[in-house]
Image (cartoon, rainbow, N blue to C red; front, side):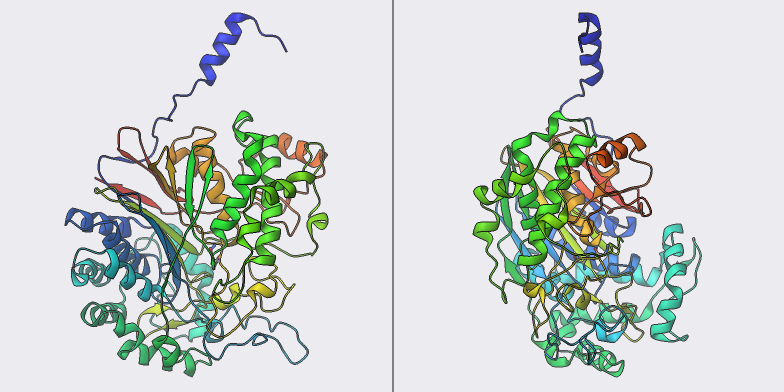
Length: 560
Ligand code: DON
């Protein structure tokens, strides 16, 4: 097509977005916390104002989420953290739950070898050894500056004052009410009925937190809390013992680090699949220069889908707990291997997942994990994703201690080839063994641009986490969107199996879908769920910070 000169100039003018993009989210001069609840972000900022650093904030914000966002915030779960200190040092902490000592490969199978429905997802049998407190204390011991009591004090105050229920929270509680009561009985102290505007107070949790503030990490893993917790889980038929709690350790890990053009991306290593899978995705698409296509155009969707498909096929086969399985990372992340994986990609026609591998499964998307991003005034950045796995985890709520227990055992592959609740089909590498950590998709990530801190990003979303984080980074980098716009933008997902693209509601036209269908892409028209709930921070060229708090939830950026 030929354009006249004035028309060309006009088009150039229209397309000429300022680079870097003008912020559209919350902007702060010094420091910022973005999390799933305003209360948790605010407690983080209070800690910063008292002179604490991003690592102190992590402890306070994490615990505050257990109070204000018990759907996913937790004491009874686990998570992953990636950090970048102001001097450029980077690292990662794995405080993922682990299988109890009594766990074994076939623990969720019946005598005929079939998976027993619900056993790895609901109630005490689904609970793995929680890692959250070990993780928070490990971080505090290595990097914290404020006394732990001072960090926990505002959280205890929040429990005692109570938390106002939001509309979204009330709806979620209503949705899960019956299941929570089925697991815990009608007399549970957890609020199974409330409406927006009500105040929730959990006095048992205040007592637990007071003991933890006084006695430290040992309270949870060797003290009174450990005894109460282990007895409670066992009385309910679960496997976690005092010995399991006493032997839990968080692990420092080398993060996965890779470059994409002039970005340096630092993300979570196994037992999370996030960093490895994202590394594969970015390296597979790098030669194709996705930025020359329009954002969310059929071409951009096609290219990403083909990279998603291939990397998830590898994820599900090769990845597991690195302390138990050898992961051939050298090969999986090598340029030659990734180039070869894309040799079968054609712009004309979809590659079928059955040609990459095989299987028939369902995807379940959800947002029951939570992510928060922190940048402090010293220039340290912390990116944390933490979870109970399902909504309110196993739904098992310990009335005496005031918190929910995870159902993270379901992230193992209970039986090779049988999908878990996220439709992920695992293999031997992720089979169950005593004290092993289950494979995760959580992808807390930090991105440097030209050697400087640029983005802190992550999201919940089960198997959709990795593709949502990848799209957010590409939105900001390749499509020059502000942090808030990059978070808001509609997302799509493909995970190899089932061989379907899912699209968020409203964000993708019929024409885009038709053009993809014409090339053989299968689209899940029945399911158009919300994908992820990204909380991110962008460092602007002048050093100010822009938050991207996902409007899909009650997420809030607070800065100063
Ligand atoms: O570790 C994982 O990959 C899952 N347990 C995360 C669960 C999650 O994101 C739930 N919410 N969507």
